[in-house]
Length: 215
Ligand code: AP5
Ligand code: ZN
View (cartoon, protein in one colour):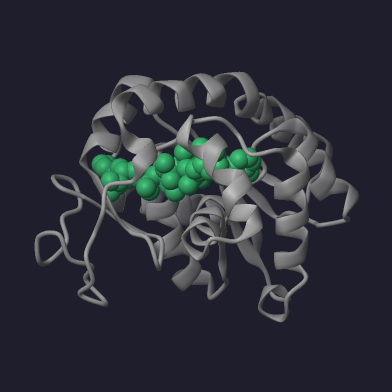
């Protein structure tokens, strides 16, 4: 199974990816997590990416496409993968298509902008694994600590309200066109499913909706 999770910042892509990768036994490829890891490691790519991320802007297509192509060529991606946060622009979607990657499903998690801002302010993240929590909707077992490693949770730098608003603007301008793009692709290709779920349901309900539609 190869699929794409599409949705605004804070729609719940990372949260659902945690369940779906277990369910289908495939790796999660989160370009956001990969970039944050590069920043933490202080690599050249991390240095280039940081300025864009801190402003809520997208990292260049060139950097991202190269990074994803390298990742999906690895052995653990042979039986499928879940793309979280990629593609995010039409050129990125074209690059995936041109690389001959046959996607089985695109899952759009739909959430209104008003809900997003509240979600981001309560999000806490375990940066090393990409696991995310919410102080109200998905609290960790021990406050401020990751459930699995017990390590500290942090608030992402780009979750400040002013940056969140910029990220939403960027989403509507550059990523939302992919909704039409993939609906069109699915209409022309029986092997590709387009699934839209209401992301304002509870975390468990969103998971159930996705699984029902996929199976
Ligand atoms: P990235 O890390 O991909 O951020 P994003 O797309 O903005 O998405 P988020 O991780 O913020 O949200 P999410 O949908 O995963 O939500 P989550 O599950 O955590 O990218 C960061 C940056 O990197 C970008 O801004 C860009 O600069 C760069 N970048 C990355 N990919 C790129 C690309 N392809 N091209 C160019 N640049 C790129 O949930 C959010 C919160 O809500 C959590 O607290 C969670 O617990 C809670 N929650 C989730 N679901 C529910 C629910 N159903 N009910 C209640 N609460 C919920
Ligand atoms: Zn995420």
